[in-house]
Image 1 (tube, helix red, strand yellow):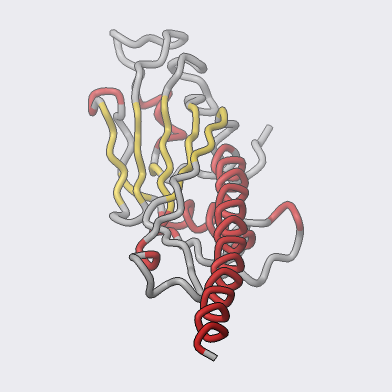
Image 2 (cartoon, helix red, strand yellow; image 1 turned 180 degrees about the horizontal axis):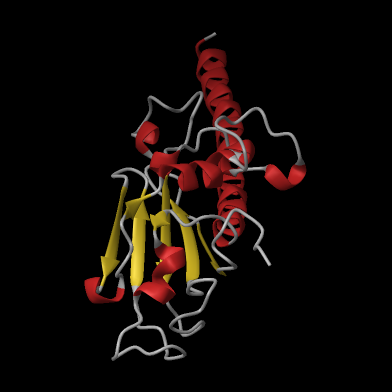
Length: 204
């Protein structure tokens, strides 16, 4: 009886541990796919950095004439702090803050404010793939990499990078053992070149 008790305990731990690690891999893959979808949405939606799509016109000056190269900039929008930080400040004239509606579009999908009411495949958001993602888990960065020009009607053409933060794995059996409860999903990151940075079709 003693031997059976010891062996069964070990077997149960192995079986339950295997199930938990399979769930871990599923969560990791789902988070990575959600980031891919978020990056694609961010590239063709209103920017989280409010005013970014007007930056090309706002920077026009005697030192930056129409057609000149766009100054280098990096704007990082953090969903946890609901702030957008621009570096350097001199290259971000007209960028006025954090756009909550834009981050909601990326996380929940087009025309949605929840993870369960998607109506079409092309309207899917990040949380439709991984329901535990909220705007607080998402970081969106806009980096000027040489595309576009000052005065461009559609705004600059930055590289858009979407990543996750502060999203722990969800363990069902091992959560109370050896600190598993605090394990974070690695910060999956996807970068794409921006489109028109607008949620609406251009007017002609």
